[in-house]
Image 1 (cartoon, one colour):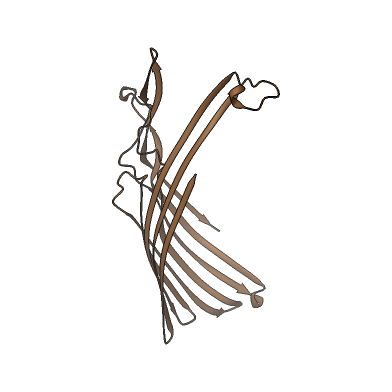
Image 2 (cartoon, one colour; image 1 turned 30 degrees about the vertical axis):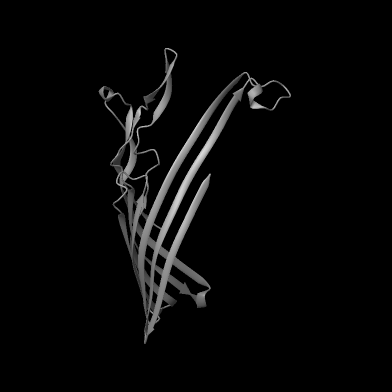
Length: 231
């Protein structure tokens, strides 16, 4: 098995009276090559450890290859000691997607403000954030795989009962949150509270197919999910 990762980042920092800017841009390239052979042996002869000495052997070969490419740009702005803001955009494309030439773009933004001492609190901070991320499909999701078969003593291939989807897209997760950080007694005790909402669209599922299609199911971007919480 071989995994490779190549990253190139450029950082630019600029300071002005009462303000500072931090700009980051980058490229990422990753490859994943999985080549696994599994031998299942039964009926081993006592004292023998070689699998070819078993009365029955079965060999399973699993091969997966994947290539991911990403670009991103982020800008962070600090105003005085109170205000912080960050904005970023990331674009990803993967060999596991149906369309391997069009990037999926994911924005992100965050904002926080330090109120300082408020009433009994030594420090009072308000914050909010919005962001999107993607979860790439499995390597096999866009292909209808083939399996070996022996019919009348002749070796051949038969299609899998699970159909691939040449238009498969990544799952997209969107999260928005608001929160506050409080400290009392000179920082001896702190309180952090966050209210969040997370939604997932284009959830990748195995969907049942009509028996007349000749297949049992297929990979589809066919689900949605939403989570709300307080922590």
